Amino acid sequence: MPPLRLDASAPGFEKDFSAFLGRNRDTDENVDRVVAEIVADVRLRGDAALIHYTRKFDRFDTDAAGLRIGEAERAEAAAKVPPAEREALAFAAKRIEAFHRALLPRDVDFTDSTGTRLGARYRPVDAAGVYVPGGTAAYPSSVLMNIVPAKVAGVGRIVMVVPTPDGVLNPLVMLAAGIAGADEIWRIGGAQAVAALAYGTQSIKPVDKITGPGNVYVAAAKRRVFGQVGIDLIAGPSEILVVADASNDPAWISADLLSQAEHDPSSQSVLIAQDRAFADAVVRAVEGELKTMKRAEIARQSWRDNGAIILVPDLAACAPIVDRIAAEHVELALEMPAAEALSQKIRHAGAIFLGRHTPEAIGDYVAGTNHVLPTSRAARFSGGLGVSDFLKRTSLVSCTPDALAALGPAALALAGAEGLDAHGRSISIRLNRRS
Image (cartoon, rainbow, N blue to C red; front, side, top):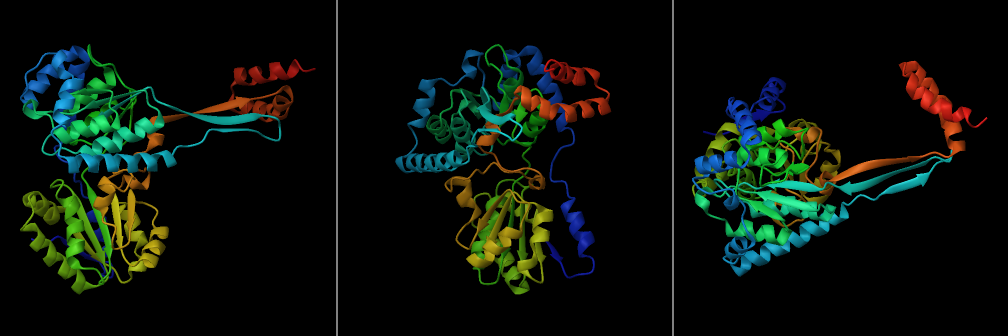
């Protein structure tokens, strides 16, 4: 069954496009109720609850001490990684570190014309918790994407949680944790791991911020503990939007669309094209590609249920449609001058990949940018994970007597207008002492 087709020139496009944007790709309406029970149980019973859920969901029986993955166990697993993959992880880590160091904000400190000193200082959170998926697939790249920016930011304690079904450690994940610099690793997953990071248990000290992708239970748990701790974002199913002209090889574009479809049946792949014959060729290429994929059933369901092809009269003018979709990943498979020009018009995207030779997957692994990005149209108001997510900005203000005299009258007027007498008194009492 082919994906949804929309034509921006058709009379009913606006209605159909709005319906497409309004689709809910999240699953299981009872998730929040289940997560609430798990979080409450972890808060009440601590380690005992973690042991229970690890036995129930991961089929691994352990005591509280066994929840933590020790240095020897980590090293034994990591040693199994072949040299080529070991080198690839180290290569990716160096690039991610370099990019995120370039993102470090600078402290600000200056004195304005009234003599008032103003500034801002950036300081890291004390402890960060990183969730790493470990169920149907394991992602060592996510380990790097979450921990390396935290290290660059200067976080003192980084706690990684990862489910280990049947007690089996993933060697690549363990190696990535060592390369990135995780201080603690716990073999727990799901909502129970998020609750443990947020509230702590007898064995696990709580953290200040939780980052990292997970399933719908993890996302619901992060939403529930927000306020007790900070979170990066609520990650939904993966997305890719490809803007491609007819000069592309359809096989290239089909591979790009399927690169996200293979994540999950709820993932979304969208093609924006101007040439109908080219779009048809891409659809045929997708069908051919699906016959050879290891995760073909997942990708096929995603493409069938959530994929879309949008025909537009002019690719150079498609930025408003791209912005309304506000996708996690946007590929501009165009010649470089045209790709750059279109990118300048796009305001809402988690990440933009410019040019025919920049597949989204390069950003997932080794480009250096972060692959933890906003989904479900959240790119309208948020960006991807970076060093700033692990930093807090503290403002500085210092007034001399003359500076207070210059600022005070306006502040007194505003305090009076708001009816806050003590606010005004704290200023006026100092001004009066000058006479």
